[in-house]
Length: 142
Image (tube, rainbow, N blue to C red; front, side):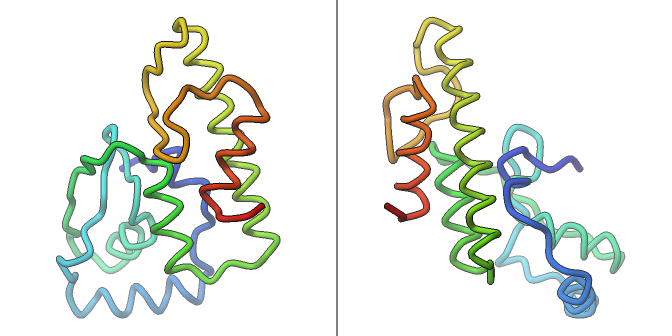
């Protein structure tokens, strides 16, 4: 299954972390942690999905039904991942880029706020400055 562009903002586990996850999953997949899909792609759970593939275990899937996929991905990954400052900086740049691109796409559709909704800023993203401000809110930085 393909990974969603929002999920790809965060780095995959290291080889050692992945090997440990594969061994853990060989004991059985915990259905309390489904692979979350959105727009037909994996939004959350890329590492679990990959580990299941290596382990030969069928994962559990759940379709995401929220209204702010960017905030969801950020919250889910920042809370459970051990990221360096430089990784967080790269993630911030990626998020800002995604928001700015979606904002440009929204403006080309007449500014009707089609597509991605961001709870931290419910208005359409119209500029790079807005994308930067929203990214700072999501990552809780000034």
